[in-house]
Image 1 (cartoon, helix red, strand yellow):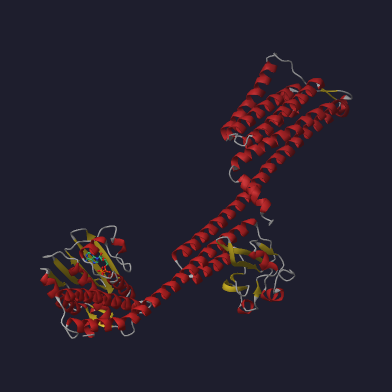
Image 2 (spheres, rainbow, N blue to C red; image 1 turned 90 degrees about the horizontal axis):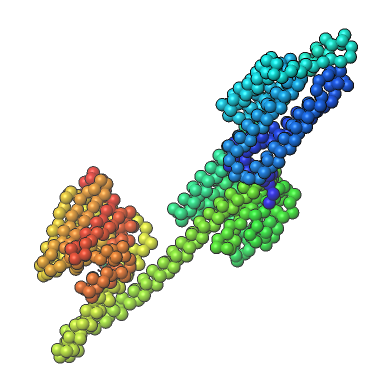
Amino acid sequence: MPGPFSSLSRRAVRILPLPLEQELVDRVAWLVRLRWVAAGAVLLLTLLARPVLSLDFPTGVLLGIGVAILAYNAVFFAVLRVLRQRISAPPVVFGRFATLQILTDLVSLTLIVYFTGGLESPALFFFLFHVIIASILLKSGFAFLQVAVSIGLVSLMALLEHAGVFPHQGIEIVGDPADASWLNLMILLGSFTATVLVAAFLATAITRQLARRTRELAYLRQRQERDFEKMRILNEVAQAVSSSIDLERVLSTITHQATEVMNAKGCSVRLLDESSRQLRMEASFGLSPAYLNKGPIDAGRGLDRRVLSGEAVCIRDAATDSDLQYPEEAKREGIRSILSVPLRAQEQVIGVLRLYSAEERCFSDEEVDFLMALAAQGAVAIRNARTFKELELLERAKSRFIFTVSHDLKAPLAAIQSQLSLLTQGYAGDLNEQQHHVLQRTVLRAESLQALIRDLLALGAIQNRLPEKNAAPVDLGALLERLREIHQPGARTRGIRIDLSLGAPGVRVKALPEDMERLFGNLLENAVKYCRVDGAVMVRLERFVDKARVVVADTGIGIPPEALPRIFEEFYRAPNAKELRTEGTGLGLALCKRIVDLYGGEIRAESVLDQGSTFTVLLPALPPEAAAEAK
Ligand code: ADP
């Protein structure tokens, strides 16, 4: 799409990388152009001097100098063309080239001055032009060098003339001597006028160039600021996309920022509804409810059909464009121009990002690119949100399935267990030793199945549960003491000591007691289960700023480093744990993690293989005063 900025931006891009070098090249070209004029003036004045002004001076020599100037300027012109084509020619080359030209000009001018009267020559003033040109083209040191060369050449000429080495070349006035003083006056005035005019021309030429450069610099600066702003916004949007699955937030950032940075009236995101083939409004900024609710947008018509085929489409005058589905409404809303770009996710167009302008405008390539970049970010956010939603639905379906199956298994399993207990108690007749042994193993298997069902039901029940409304202050010290009482006998049979240290009294959390029991019960059970015979389990409770911290450590088998990141996953059991204890569901820690998450806490595990493990739980604690009141 052609834009009004296109040609300007291309020109700016060419200037941008080499502004100083470009300036020097332009000025050297300007010098060559000026020289054509100067050589023409020399030839013309020489030819007119005798017939018009009745002056007598060496016309042939001066014509020769004029032709020589034309000739060497032709050489300079050719060299300049070659240098211009060599983009990489360093600026110093152009600097030297300019110096050479000015030196050549000074020699030519000295010759002209000599042949038109030496120090009395009206052309003497013209050294001034060279001083001005040298100051424009060269660095100040070199410019002063040219001044010195000018003085040197004129002095040398005057001295040599004075010493009689060269004869004096005076200008003779031919014809009526009565006109001589009049002619002298005219020549002086003429050369003075020419000097002043050329000096003014040179000075204004520099000022014009400077003004143009200043405008270009101001434009480049504005452009740079705009580009910087766009990059900042793209970065902000990219961060929002990568750090959040909150689609509403990301899309509202996109529509808001696009409107601001592109100086527009508003912006919207519409997503394609595949079943109805309509574009549904997903997010907007700067548009009135009346416009937003104007009616369904048919994806298969006009503008949107083109955008959905992957094209960026600009509508310059919304009120008259037949591609727009609601031109009247757009007019009422104060919309003049619209730029629509596709939202593309994995090669598939899933919607449209639209920018609305209150003024009639044509959007530049640069603006289209920027909106496309925002649209790409928006599409990523939409894809992320959709994937997340699908995963969530799958997760919910899986949990529902597990919950239902576990629930359905619970009653038959209870029946099997009661039948087994009748058998073991001999109600169905005496059992021989082998039958008794088989039955015992079946009872154990049924018990682990029951444990599995219990954990699965607990997991399903806690899934998607909101923070409990019925939560009440739970005294963690008392709870841990109770749990130690429960696990102590089992631990003692394997020579394991359970030490409990309650660093701060009355540490309480707001929770359901059964959740806390399950959380710390599981951790203590694991610590004892995976502890070595004659080992120790240490439980410590303390207040840590506004948190309750519970540490459960053991001197057990430890967790292999590669297994450590996975132990909170459902059904995961480390190889050394499977080896030591065949029973276990791999659901205990997953449950602990869910409970801790539910209460806004944190759980982490550290372990050294064959030396022991430490589990740390942090939960928001009730403030001590509230804890005291809750007693
Ligand atoms: P399990 O029923 O296997 O105990 P959990 O979910 O409670 O399942 O624990 C998951 C895995 O984490 C265990 O199988 C074991 O590998 C490891 N683990 C948990 N607690 C300990 C511990 N105190 N010492 C060593 N390994 C542990």
